[in-house]
Image (cartoon, rainbow, N blue to C red):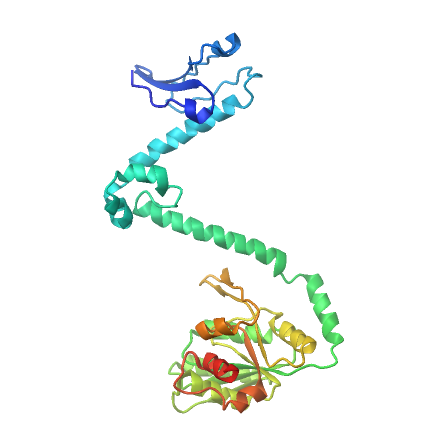
Length: 362
């Protein structure tokens, strides 16, 4: 007979003890749930409530539901506490004390028992039992965030047939259709990503756009062939091939020289636009004709095309702008303003658009 594993009076919240006894015999382990009376003042009906469930297979016992009108929910609480204790012993087997100390220096500095720390603090703080458990927890947490974001997309960002009809109806009523020049410097991207980027512009619901592409002397000849193919396919696509590699600022200026639109939208060679992106730009310009700078939220895609949680931006905040480029992706600028600033300054590669906005605002 093994010793008692669990006394659950405090967890049940009322004065009785629950004992799980394991007895090994010829036919295998036998599980017995026994009910111990602690408070002798309890009603006679309660003191005589006992149940024993036997299992020759050794699996967890199926709890037999008895009449418990004077203790509603008792068996549910009993089962919950049994499960909790079972999980606790499983955690104990999987727990790696040495790894826990190495992974969490505060535990090592405290000098206490790592297992006790995990039970009291670590579990609630989301700490792992061992390296594998820690990795899996991180993946599950990320998965929950992605799942929640996809729920948000379904509610707020799904382009339904009805929304398409509404957009087409509103566009038909536009008295002014601004030409939007999409500026895209290109240098040796993955061919499939480049094609997806170009197709995302061609698939825009709003038709008044031009795609101005500069190839910054790519060494991959497949890029040249892709660009030439699209230039022949769609007259709204303009391409210039640079003889030397000038990096992103110089390449952006070359593409800017091709632009004839009222506004320019900066677009990377591995970006993708949702189909209604340029419509919302045009709609915002229509509602705010004095605007010279527009920007949007953005998210990203993994290699399988799954949308990942992105950046939901606030209203314009100059202090935030000084700390980070909070207007890129998708950043849209009045073309005259960019030309007044002399285009994009070389030497600020990677932050050329940010530098221009901050300089103008200052």
